[in-house]
Length: 205
Image (cartoon, rainbow, N blue to C red):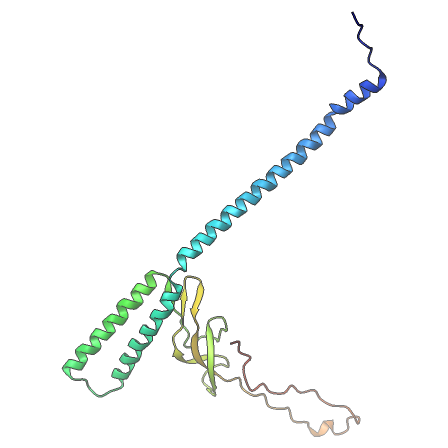
């Protein structure tokens, strides 16, 4: 019968290190952090997938709606042309009423799918919503104001579907300050800085 070998000091040190509470706690904290990071990554992936799927549903008709805007434009042009004519005959008045009803229903249908017209007239020019096609002098309006809408713009939900094509009031030129007699005695080489007037708005396309 063999006798058990007594534990040595080295064996006790190895055993103590193997079950050291501090080491186990550090490993536990490290594993917990890794688990939390993995859970956070999984949640972010889930949210991104949900957001992507939601955007796909919301904006699936964007291309189709853009094509329908051409129909809206043509109906509106027909109405504007008829309004500028002399009193209409009974037949033409009935036809115009039908066109107006068609346009109204079409706009209501587009609005149910998130397509809305941009209010541009009288607003400050916004390059995110407007496209300037011309600048005009209009003393009655502040510089950079939309004074005419050439083509209506539309958004779909929170995104731009088509910018409004607009005419903008021109920025007024600044007059150069006159140098009075009191400046005649200024030292040679001295000058008075004067900004050059800006003739056009810096408009994004």
